[in-house]
Length: 252
Image (cartoon, rainbow, N blue to C red; front, side, top):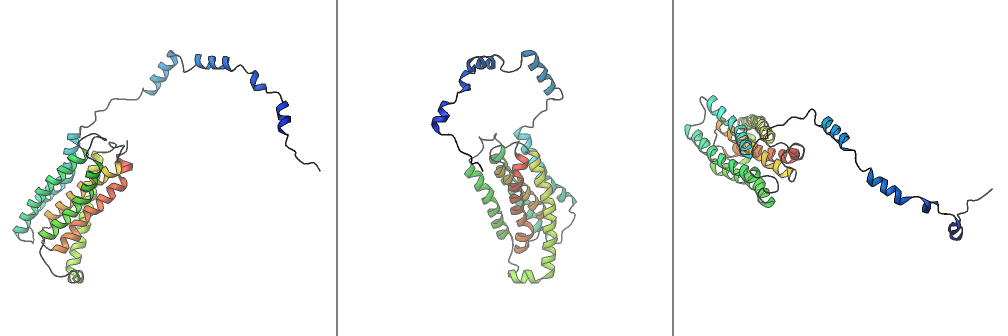
């Protein structure tokens, strides 16, 4: 039985080093001389790679903002035209319309701060993050102040009529919010390689606000709990969804 014995350092030193005899200088000169294809081959490669390419016109930031407002506010305008009568008093509908105008200005400000300038030159990350968290909070405060006291939360949950109507409005708000947020994300697709999640959250915020305002016009109720649960949660939901899908949709 034989054992493997490693050679000692003295034995290794006696071995000839054939690598020293290789013509490294000549090899380096040949490599430098043959660096890259010739001009004729380069031209053929360029022609093959650009054969099917065609120029496309990119939308400006102003057009994208208008497109975002069209997606988020257009649904509300359609609902205003389709709503012939409401069970709620006219004062509630009037308040919902005035609220929609005011929050439409807020949505425009979010778009201007969050998207008007190219990536890297937009508003500070801290400011845009504050908008993503602060605007939904202010919207909930607005709903609580705009609503009236309809009893305790336990009474609201115990009433089948209230909860059923809230569930119906909530599902409607989710459907409208999905269309609105998808439209805003589509308008800004592949435009932010730096902060796509934050931009996605702001895009979802605009879409969610548009959905909440549209549902507020279609169902101009004044019940506080109904406003918060059925109309307000959609804003938080699509701000979160926008942040989750922003990297996939907004990254070039």
